[in-house]
Length: 355
Image 1 (tube, rainbow, N blue to C red):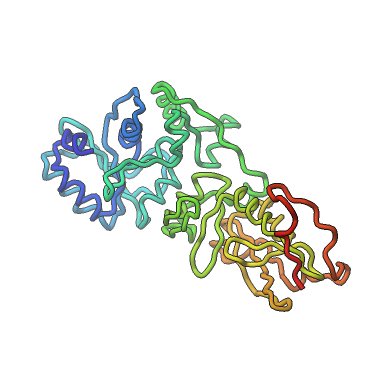
Image 2 (spheres, helix red, strand yellow; image 1 turned 90 degrees about the vertical axis):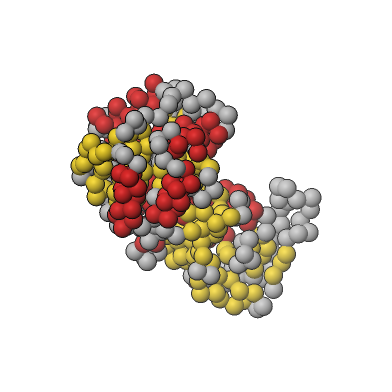
């Protein structure tokens, strides 16, 4: 990155420090090109400008720095294609072009980019703190595959109502060697629930999730945007992020029998849930799950669960609440029925009968 920034006439260390201090994000085609080079993939294009996104409360010092390096303002307007929450877009020129996109009090600029960019490959950015390049979908980007990441745009593409600006951008990147793929559409229920439309009004904006697989904290928005399989479990005022398929497969391997309830399952956090709850986790369109209201059965606690879409979480209104107490049934036997052999186990000895 140092060579790239120096070519724009900036002192690299000063520039890096300013980007970190102003919480700005360099995103788009320049980081995309450099991300590919960082991973030994030839980008087959050279970026024509540097796009810097910054919140309006941090913009003044950044603009002053660019002007102090002999750049002049050649364009200043209040729109930027079809992106929302843009306060102003300032274009500077010397030998090269720098664009500063000033955002309307979004606070968390990276989350804004992940929510509002159109193409997956363009959601690439420079992490100034680590001095490395990152992208929303690493495996797809390295294969030079791209897709629309906004559900609204996917539907517009299908019914051929995409704007000319979006069509021109898609063609531009196709000419640069990228293949456009159709991202899987959400189910109708998900679409209506606005589950994956993580706009800047969502209460998830700016929050962090502990990615269990990566064993690190990441942006909640980034985690959910990376895969439709990614879900959140809220425990102790923190989000834990899981792949839905892997999580449910793991939980299924921790099955036991609870009299008058039926099969129950231990989650990775050792919360005991019912088969009904597990099936909702596996097959429903809900994205966020929270344990609640434990019910005592002998020396065991069986938990109730709230199930949310992203929108429902922001509204503090669960889509479904499953009460542990209501899972109790006098019709179930006092002893476990015959336990069948489970895939991945040598015997049924690991299956515990509770009470």
